[in-house]
Length: 149
Image (cartoon, rainbow, N blue to C red; front, top):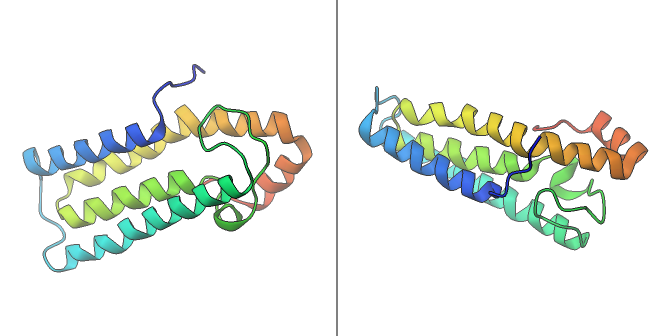
């Protein structure tokens, strides 16, 4: 699989723009009215916090945050105890929070598309690199920690 020169935050930005456009142009149906839509702030905040924690965990281990760069360490602590991909999970939580805030049905369509793109473009390749580099330790980690949650 060809490695993408476009980094995940760019995909996140594109997904956010798509969700807002869908909400404004094709809202389909309002499913979450005010003030219940404000609950989306919780998911959005959780996603941001999860990304900050995962980024900190990688930096503390003195390994790269950027996809497709060789890792210096296999991080299995902090946010990585619950998910092998907490940053991507954080992005999905951000998108979920935004969809709830917008309150219409159509923005929710972007979330599974984003998750599949992240899986196919980044996660599969990244996990392949980790498996090759960390072999048995990776297999043990993979057997105990789920890909998303």
